[in-house]
Image (cartoon, rainbow, N blue to C red; front, side, top):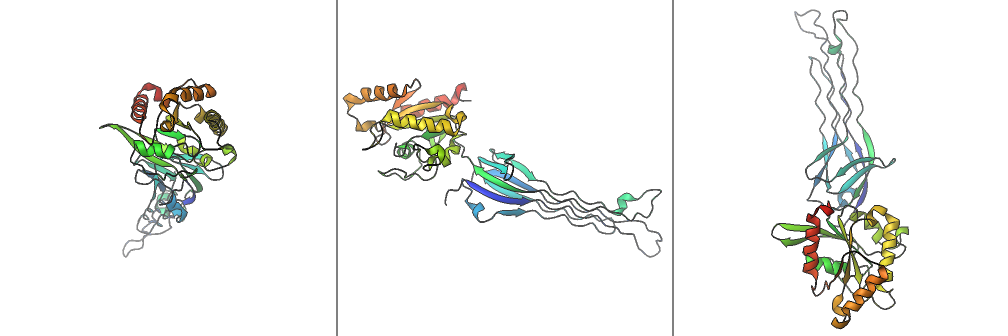
Length: 339
């Protein structure tokens, strides 16, 4: 199924049913009095999060969700039927905002949680409710109120513990293949990743974390160049970013430190809070560097970046250094620092 992370839908709750004016008319019961029943409440629209979905693709085809209106009241003090509710299933991590104003309606982040997004109309009042000692034949009733309606924007932000960040062809997809069962496409040319990929990394029997891979960033991404900036929102829920750097970029590419600095600038321009997240430097494709030169290459990149945080040198393809990195990530996520 195609990955879709944005959609716009229209929701309308059901109107409340109308109350009616009615009087009891039975043989041998003169002046039976008012017996107009109330209407029924309109159905409401709810959303519920489910782990069984990971895309908003279904909302390309169904964009209108309308709950049923309440039934009108009837004679004999009979109340109208309540309108059926509509429940919309959404993938976890979906944020819902009002399309016009941008007002936040809901953030679907817990499985099974039922969230009201459009309330059904209140039922109308029948004339039996207006009976009193001074008004024995009331001829008034009230209609039901209209249900709420909105045009809503859905925006999916995948829920992951760790996010991968880097230039195209930095080896992010190879890394996620090495540490998890995810199988994103891998090739020897840039931009092979066209949408986010999630993988579960199992460190031991009962210890695991989720890693997210997004398309690579390039210079000018904050202005809409390339694909990566469109998917940076998927890193906003992560607790740790891994900045993958190709230690030996291809011909014509920038030096690793310069390329890494470009990524950081784009990240800061996009979202300061994302830029300030905990971030580790991962120097990838170490297998391409002769063993005697690896320390010098590592130190040169770190010095060029002025980096003072955690640094790991790995080969995702060969698996070198990957287990140590995953174990340290797990320890970090279990620590208070990551909370």
